[in-house]
Image: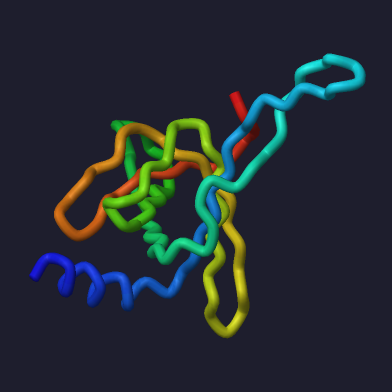
Length: 122
């Protein structure tokens, strides 16, 4: 029954994501080691959720922040520091680039991963 519920939930996810991680690559000629970006997951169904947070914190000027959450299958593992590129297919295709922030909340049918804008690999 869990499998049927998960499949139903994932059909509602219209976004797709590709997850990239860095891999050490050594040039055989020069023996120099560098890092290359390789896909870890490709075209993975997901759902991107945005929430606007307002706060006054005792100031006269309110601050506004945005919280971004990724809903994705609990079967996949996205290590910290990966680049997550989410493509949203609406009337206008949009692409968002994030990295994982904090530990994911893992549930029976999905996991929730807090995201932050991708600023580069650490």
